[in-house]
Amino acid sequence: MRALRAWVDPFVLALAATLLAGLVVPLPAPARAGVAVAADVAVVVLFLLYGARLSTREVLAGLRNVRLQGGILLATYAVYPLLGLALQAATGPALGPALTTGMLYLTLLPSTVQSSVAFTSVARGNVAGAICAATVSNVLGMVLTPLLVLALMGRSGSVGFGGLREVLLQLLLPFVVGQLVQPVVGARVRAHRGLTLAVDRGTILLVVLSAVTAATAAGVWAAVSWQMLAALLALCVVLLTAVLAATWWGGRALGLDGPDRIALLMCGSKKSLATGLPMAAVLFPGAVAATVAVPVIVYHQLQLMVGAVLARRLAARPA
Image 1 (cartoon, rainbow, N blue to C red):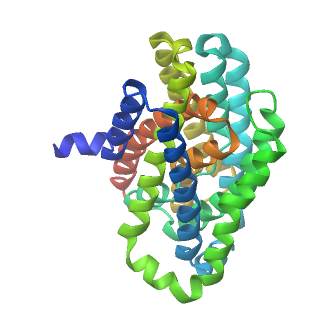
Image 2: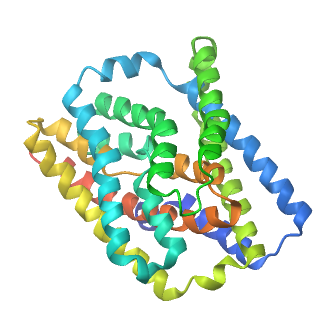
């Protein structure tokens, strides 16, 4: 069992079970509406907690490392989108329109927080820099990701400027409110990490269930074949390999030392499931959001597996 947990995130298994439930258990329209409302409320609460948990001091301290922060932002919001556009042009027919949209959307997301920092720590990298970079990436992502979606995916199902407005209201506004109360409640929120984790994962499960049941009701899954899913996995492997190479050797080109290169590798190669799925629920119609979510979920598990192996290998290097 321990060996299985080392390779497969139990939460991803819960996601898979939620996806399966949404596929095989049809919900009546009133029930789907209730789940959708619950998911929207949970998203607001989640980003309120994110804002309340984040220490402003950590951000200010990490921002001093300009080369590391700039390298991670460049990888997240420039290298990744360019690779996404290249893959879209080269492999669109193999995936079909829906999964192609999801693959491009994946490349526009911010970095993860928890796994980036955890893997950086295991690999003996710059943990403070990783905390700051992952945090800044997520804060900027609340604006940059919708703008990139609007610019690059305007004809692929995005709800346009209305989606940006919804992101500002449902994600950024609660985050700002959380930051305002952070000096008062921040220590308590950080002391109860399980609360944020439970809301985090519960929100994602609700978002997935809402999106998948909407897609099932709309008959979206008839257009997704096993061959498309196999092609999706192969493309995720190609994408992750390319970004890992770019961040590792890019760190050398930027003149970063070993710990900073590890932070760049771990933060610059990750994409956030926790931010990506709630944001997809806001940016896309329900049926579209379900298929957009599939590449994000597949890539999330792949990056965790590869990241765990790389972190162990780097940790074993000579001091």
